[in-house]
Image (cartoon, rainbow, N blue to C red; front, side, top):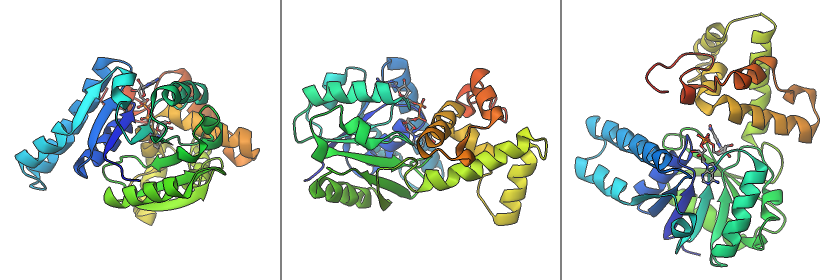
Length: 287
Ligand SMILES: NC(=O)c1ccc[n+]([C@@H]2O[C@H](COP(=O)([O-])OP(=O)(O)OC[C@H]3O[C@@H](n4cnc5c(N)ncnc54)[C@H](O)[C@@H]3O)[C@@H](O)[C@H]2O)c1
């Protein structure tokens, strides 16, 4: 199947970046969120990112405008999914909200439209069951920030059709990304492995063994990691992180996935990371 037009649901941390990558590859994109100010905030972030590219002479101002013009922001769900071949869902990491949205979409979209979820840790199978299009449902797990990270995990469940899988792998290639394909399972490939690393880092902080800057610096300097676990937690968002490790803990029933206390407390305090201006670090200009 050929993908011509894409709808991205959710203009937050991931959605705006996914929309930008698709537009950069030449696709028409509808970017939808529940409030106009959220849509505009996402589009402004794309504008800023592209302006940085123009400044660094990676693209001309005309090229940046062309990319931006391929993205249409909207809040009306029906309008956003009209005539699209693929919906990439990047809304809040709440399985019930995601299922409700997919159920509604199933009723308003053409039977040919592929549904893809960018969930970090929720079950693709469970979301599929909210629809009547098992063959056209798939996981498409991007990494943060989508504009810079090269990989995408493609997650199939028992009834994902080969055509849908091939279409998505082919699309990822056209987006300039490399894919790892796996079966539906908590955390897929990367998050299942990386979750243990995050949790041990945060546990070390909880146990008073080292402070976040020391752990981050030791890993960056010692192993040439680009970012440390606390910087990454701030970038991902504490609420998303807690939901993710909580799901692993419940579904895989292993102690190494138990949410660390400092992560729970950060969520309770509303210190969600960069998006609220404070997490393990402070971000004065980004809140
Ligand atoms: N943050 C990351 O590093 C990361 C990485 C990979 C995958 N993900 C996954 O991507 C998804 C989005 O995460 P995020 O970090 O971008 O979250 P976010 O909170 O930054 O953005 C979510 C957006 O979805 C919007 N939204 C909520 N309900 C909606 C609805 N019914 N319809 C349309 N929009 C709705 C919110 O208003 C918000 O703007 C989650 O499933 C998350 O697990 C996140």
